[in-house]
Amino acid sequence: MRVSVILAAGEGSRMKSKKPKVLHEILGMSMIEYVIESAKDSNVEKINVVVGHGEEQIREHLKDKEVIFTRQPIGKGVPYGTGYAVMQTLDGISDEDTVLILNGDTPLIKSQTLNELINFHEENDYAATILTAVLECPYGYGRIVRDEDARIHKIVEEKDACQKQKLIREINSGIFVFRGRELKDSLQFIDSNNNQGELYITDAIEILFKNNKKIGGFNLKDTREILGVNSRDNLSTCTDIMKKRINEKYLIEGVTMIDANAVIIEPKVEIGSDTIIYPGAVLQGKSKIGSNCKIYGTTRIVDSEIGDEVTIDNCLIESSKIGSNSKLGPYAHIRPNSNIGENTKIGNFVEIKNSNFGDGSKASHLAYVGDADVGKNVNIGCGVVFVNYDGKNKHRSVIGDHAFIGSNANIVAPVKVEDYGYIAAGSTITKDVGEGELSIERASQRNIEGWVERKGLKN
Ligand code: UD1
Ligand code: CA
Picture 1: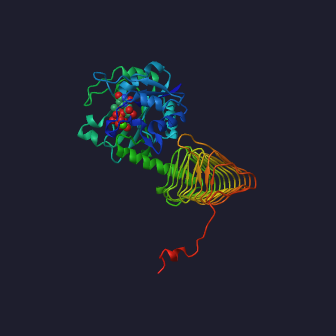
Picture 2: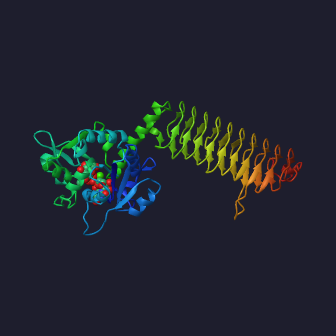
Picture 3: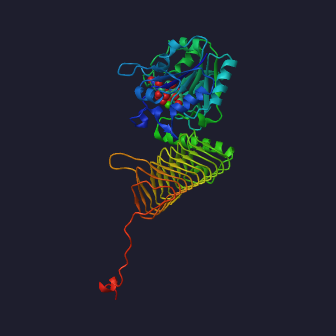
C-alpha cells in the first residue's frame, strides 16, 4: 500500500505567530491543505498527519478531510525532530508499504512530481529515495553528501555542516519515499547527537547507506516546488509563485489578464474562456466565473457564481449568484445569499442582501435592497430603501413583476407590491399595493406665491 506521512507537529517559531505554521495560508488555502491535495493526487491510499504543536487547531481545520492523525508528544524532556515525528506513525506501517514522507510546510510540491518520485523509487527498488534539488542559495537546507562514486551517503543539516559541506548546493527537499521495512529498521538507530539535539529523519539515510541499502536521489529541476516555509518572507515568496502558477493555468485556458501580476485568484476558482480580468481583481473561495465576462478594478468575488457575459466594475460580491448578461457597478455590494437574475443592472452604490432580484430588473443608483423578493423587470429608483429591520427583527418584502419603485421610496417590510404596482417617488410604503395600482404617500404640494420677497430674501 502507498501511504503518506505528513509532518505537521513542529512549532514554526520563525513565523512569530499564534497560529500553527502549517495553517498559514497561501491564497486562501492552508499550506497543509496544499500538501494533502498533492498527496491525494499521487495515488496515496492513506494519509497520516503527525500533529503536536497546535494540534487542536490543526485537527479542527482538517476535520472534513480524509486523513488520519497521529499525535507526537510535545513538551520538556520529550524528544523532538522530524525523525521522532515519523516514529510515531510506524505502528500503522507494514514492511511492504511504500511510505511517502512530506512536510506540511512545503506547499508548492506538485502531485505530478510525487508520482514521478514514487515510480522512480519503486522501479529502482530503492530502500529510500530522496527528492533533491540543486539550489543557487542552499542556506538553511540539509545538504546531500555523496561519496566518490556519487552515491548518496548521508544528509547533513545546515546547523551541523562543516564549511566544506556548506558549499554543497544539492539539498534535501524534506520529501522522501521509504520502503516500510527499511524505514522501521533504520529509525531504531537514529540518535540526537547533533547541534539541535533532535532526532532527524535525515539520519536514517546514513544508517541505510552503512547497511549497503540502495538509496536513490530524484533530482527536481523546477526547484520552486520544494521551497519550504519557515518565515513570513518564505510565505510571501511561495504566495507569489502560487499566484503565477494559478494565473498561468487560466491564461492557457483562454482567460485574458491585462496585468497577470496584479490579479489574485485562489486555487479553487473556476473561470470560463474569453473572460477579461483587469488589474486589482481578487477572486476567492469556490467562485465560478462564466465566459466572456469583464471584471474591472478592485472587484472582489467570494464564493459566488457569475454567469456568462457579465460586466463587473469595482464590486464586492459575496456568496451570491449573478445571472448572465448582467451589469454590476461601479461600486455595488452584493451581500451573501443574493440571487441576481439575468440581464439585470445594479449600478453605483447599490447594496443587495439576502434577496432575489429577478431577470431584467434594475437598481441603477444608490439603493438598499435587503431581505426582498424582487420579481422580473422591476425598476428600483434612485435612493430606494428596503426598510427590513425594525430594531428587533428582520422582515421580508415582495415586489411583483414589472413593478416600479419611484426614487427615494421606503418599502417598510413586511410589505407586498403586486405585479405592475407603481410607487410614487418619496413615498413611505407600509401597506400592500395591489396589481396595477399607483401608491402615493406624501403630503400634497403647496406653492406660496411671493414668499421669498416678503421675507426680504431677494435683493
Ligand atoms: C527539514 C530537513 C532538512 C530539509 C528541510 C526542507 C530534517 C532534520 N531536516 O529541515 O534536511 O532540507 O526540512 O524543508 O528533517 N516537524 C514535526 N515534528 C518535529 C519537528 C518537525 O512534525 O518534532 C515537522 C514540522 O512541522 C515541519 C517539518 O516537520 O512541517 C519540517 O520541520 P522543520 O523544523 O521546518 O525542518 P527544517 O529545519 O526545515
Ligand atoms: Ca522547514
